[in-house]
Length: 278
Length: 317
Image (cartoon, rainbow over all chains, first blue to last red; front, top):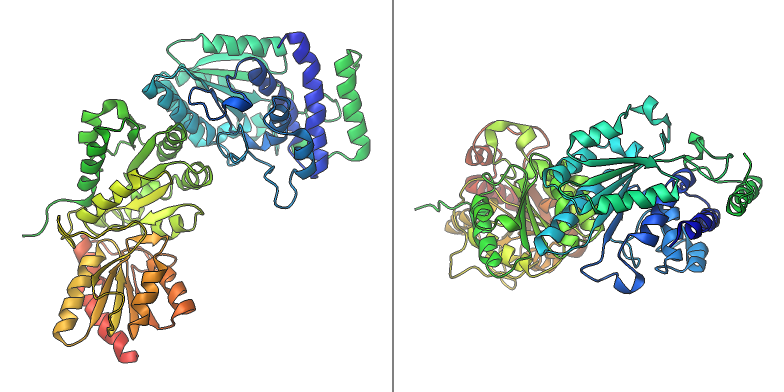
């Protein structure tokens, strides 16, 4: 898709995402808003999978390790034709629903269950190793949150990805600099993420994470990098799209009231029309 | 002459045999290929081997990723570590995501006798049994271990398998090792045979249970012995058959007293054929220092201890 198309679409998907949250009565809205642009760019322009190829052994693999951003993932999976938006909105978080608050690999297009943080990267390393063993050209992508990087298992995965020089593996860190208790730097210092990943043998791309063109370029660069895995540090804004929730830790999983909802969707519409003024 | 081949060695032999014709058989170790007796596999099939270093969470996560892409992943690491350090990976990446991973807990139970509680895995049977969709196996000897691995190679579900470190005396023979996956094996007695006591054991205690049964027979006490290598799914029908033809039931396991073989057998016996029942297990405490035979003898888990408990239990019936 063109950048112009994606610039429009990302506001529609934010609206879908917030509607899913409102319908289900809860969700992780802040992290959804920060990561949804990277999800959209990946699925629209890079990830080689479609509803018709969910069982194709040569399909690209994707793992949402920050599984709590599921509502954003639902919005993208619906837009890409894997799931039906009306059905997701009708049943999200409802009794007996398959549409739960974290990835459920009983649903088409979802490879692995997650929810517990720090699991996705080692699993992605396994998928990338399997591709190498089988001589298949598919790529594996895994998205993590920055707060998630405090989990030691992330660095076990980083170590093995670097050790095995898995250039068919691409990790994305949603570096929105907030977690549920506040600033990531106050909770457990992480800067410099770039230096940390580089020390583990990764190609590091640090980009504006809510910038469609920058994300598109970064995924291209990752795919053309040989001899080491790539991590894209997506420097995002938590709650991106409405000043009501941007950079506010309580919006990690705040459920908007009706007034807040109206303001948020109005801000999305203004962004889409190019009339947004902070 | 006692057997000198450890169960772990049998695992390597079967996996190497399978790898000859199946490129999807993959073995992973966490700096544990020597302890797991899997070094020959790594040497013969380097393209089907993955070393992760001392990183059990990575071990199990990578195994799940490989399995999600069609591999039959066998991840081996000391039982004490793989059943605790990577417990959440076993729960989420293997059982919940439903991947074809066999976790091989080596040097299980009190195999690392003198190394202390950090290296003992008394908790593994209960912990792994509590995970939905996880199967738990404790084979008794090298022949049953080989049969179990052959069976697991044929299916696509996850499992936890525990073996000890040292050679154990055979229960079966090369030519006589009856095996059906998830069905317990009668080693003494049978489903329709009335006895005084039913002894249900697993792992390294099966041999002791058999010897105890033979010793009891010399005293005129009839005992059946059921090798319940499948802790989960427990062979409940065999438990009912054993209990319903006996006056009392005795279980024996190299594990914590809570949540393992004894607890699970007690649930079935209590619900379907109530009998006086005693569970022989390790204590709910750090285990005394010693070799496995010394530790078993100290806690009454050897043949003499099992026979003694059997007589005491019958006296109460």
